[in-house]
Image 1 (cartoon, one colour):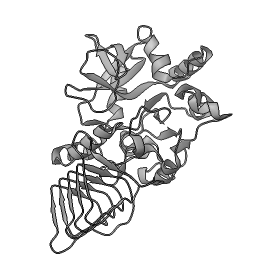
Image 2 (cartoon, one colour; image 1 turned 45 degrees about the horizontal axis):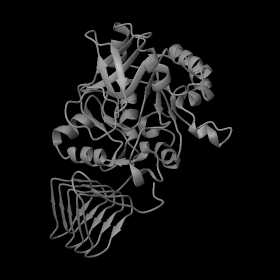
Image 3 (cartoon, helix red, strand yellow; image 1 turned 90 degrees about the vertical axis):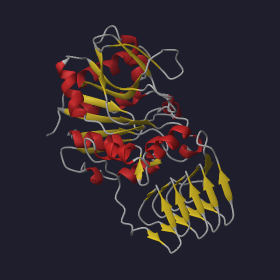
Image 4 (tube, one colour; image 1 turned 180 degrees about the vertical axis):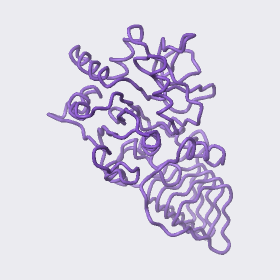
Length: 370
């Protein structure tokens, strides 16, 4: 069933400390979990929930984004009267890159105006989760909220950057701070906001008229007492992937079958760009234990507790432990990796050894890959 709600995936000024992993790509298209990109999770959640129209507000380094999303066919968003819209940043001069998301919403206001859908959900791309937006909208209506913020209980140590949230007894948001704030709370925002479309348009116009151009910082936080901002508590898996330690940790957690099944199949499947690859080949003498190995790999050495993306080659005598090797990586004969992240198309020479730690994995890069 289609929801009366349009989707916005907001890539404007996403908070991230991914270093060289986002030097040539935006955070939304950082490879994840063997064959996916980070944006696949929120996009698939919208599609599975029945959101008929999704706009991706691009910002910088969006060449890989355009290549990955294409016409939206892999997410069944290429149909007439609905579908996927990738909206590049509106620029009159170079200073426009520094302006906030409200400015970009205003410059693309025709996207909102042309739709008869009553509600809008605005989300970021770096939340690895599987969300039912139909349930969120149902609660939003039942509680007669102005804005519903999707939140998650997070009692353990956090490696990603999040906003901390504090609620009153009724579930209303009374305080929200960035990760560097001093608010004591085990609740974090998943950066997903549901509201009526006309309220969003009003917030855009009012905030810009006051010289303010950031949705959360300038339009929502100052109005917590004025607007009824409620929280929806997500009870599924969440990975906040906007730092290198968080990227490593949440990839490694997927080696737990329970985590994998929860993230990728509940409440619906996660889709990605389809590539036709042959099955992986395990040569005589190879050994692969407790690992995710994507299609097209060729294993001659040892792989333990690791994630290999498509087309990775592990040569004879090579050892890969507790590591992430992205697409078309090559580990030469008798080379070794331990607690490492290899970007796409990185080649490790024969006998070369790289080693990091679980808290700070070694990051190996090849320039100009997306």
